[in-house]
Amino acid sequence: MKSLSDKKSIIEALDQMAVFLEIKGENPFKVRAFSNASRALQSSTEDINKLVETDRIIEIKGIGKGIADVITELVKTGRSSDLERLKASVPSGMIEMLRLPGIGPKKAKALWEKLGISSVGELEYACMENRLLDLDGFGKKTQDKILLGIEMLKKYSERHLLSEAKMEAETLFGSIKDFPGVIRGQIAGSIRRYMETVKDIDILISAKDEDRDVIMDKFVSLPQVEVLIAKGNTKSSVTLKGGMNADLRIVRDQEFPYALHHFTGSKEHNVAMRGYARKGNIKMNEYGLFKGDSENIECLSESDIFDRLNMQYIPPELRENYGEIELAQERAIPRLIDIKDIRGIIHVHSNYSDGVDTISELAKAAQQMGYHYLAITDHSRSAAYANGLTEERILRQHEEIDRINTEFKTFRVLKGIECDIIADGTLDYKDHVLASFDLVIASVHYKLNMTEGEATGRVLAAMQNPYVTILGHPTGRLLLAREGYPIDMHRVIQSAAELGTSIELNSNPHRLDIDWRFLGYAKKQGVKISINPDAHRIKGIDDIQYGVGIARKGRLEERDVLNCLSADELIRFAYARRGRQV
Ligand code: DGT
Ligand code: CA
Ligand code: ZN
Image (cartoon, rainbow, N blue to C red; front, side):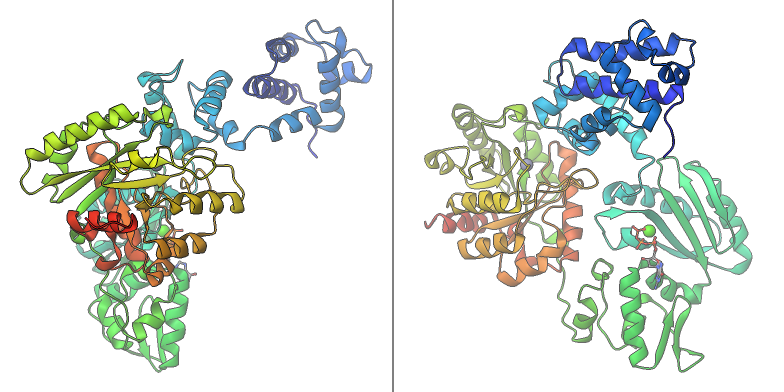
């Protein structure tokens, strides 16, 4: 092991101890003792190794016995058991959080204690939901500063949210497609497949051989390019200013369909497709489909490839080797849900709780986007951090909704609530209050630290309540930030099927929860999935596009989706669960 006996590392270790002690809320004198010791070491000119050897560390002014022992252990063994113990008792995400500008131990501690935030991802999510505005010692300025810092941190992370990668890719492709010489092109890779997280951007274009150099020159000198990784005339790689890597590949136009299929992937899908083609004596790769050894089977488009292989076209979202190849052979891939099939928006927060826009503004925006209804679902009373609704404020909100509804002829605002599931699995309001809503989303928001048994029990208990129309974000995960609580999703789905409860596909790009890998099972059980934006502002309604993409990935059809129903049908669904007719 590398010895820590250099002064700098020891100073760092002492500083870290001070920070961890402060986060843990230890005695301020003890915290100060460590920072004082660190400062004392910094100004001391003595050789630490010698001081330790001769047992004279304690002679440095400002270093007492306890800290001298820590330093001695650091010098002799290269580690400190005290520091390691402390470090293990603080969530590892907190350590990353401390790298953000404006977040010192005091603020980190407040975020942890007051909002249960222990990672950068959770912090980002909380900022987006305006959670920091009312927190003591924070405010709009701090919140903005933190968000900016997080953006910088994210530059260096391995994977990215689909939403961010897709927007970057679309801007980039928007420039590339207009370069002179580009014949056709497309965004490929995991973005085209709508994977929830993405490593890098893959763009494929076709061009004549003689145009390649100019196109590559233009690509690498685009304003959003920060670093050139490699430049060639078939492939160039760059790092964008936002921190993401992007590859541009150029092929001959007649190769484009095969290359598009290849670079869309996934790798697992490609391998399985090649295996399937081989059974028909066809060789398949990124350059073509070959009968026997050499004769190329001409394909003008990607769908020709599937045709020639005698299978149904497989939409990109399905290409994960998740059963799609068998389905395509049987021609059993259904017509997947499309955003145009969505009739109404469910799960939107207004300024009654932690949203920023008024109900009326949200309703008008949703109508303009072509939807027929909007179910407002603010937070319930125990969500104090989000200004959850008291019973009295529910009444006021319902009066306001009734008034707004008189202004619309062909649009309707529904009365919903996102009701917290209390730790014991009961709901945040009494039944007679729940009965006043058109629909109820029940979600877990706190005490996320559960075993699988606890989480499953808590959620199943909540679903027993007949007023629960939809189970909200069923694992509580935040992509790239926080694992969801472990839960027996198959049992939850079975229970939803038996009870007639819907399950949410939360379309916020940080969540995308329920995971698409469970959608096939939900569909088979006949559970309706509610594709919800969980919007906290008008713009957030657009997030439903990510939910629709994920629903397609899970092979959902229009009839599998709750908000493809009309408002009347939706209310009938909710009331059927309550055992009542409308
Ligand atoms: P990611 O990790 O989000 O970037 O995911 P992809 O799927 O975009 O992966 P990437 O960028 O490494 O490669 C793009 C596509 O190229 C991939 O989806 C399929 C194809 N590909 C890459 N490596 C292989 C391979 O070893 N074998 C085959 N058959 N295809 C590959
Ligand atoms: Ca990729
Ligand atoms: Zn929620």
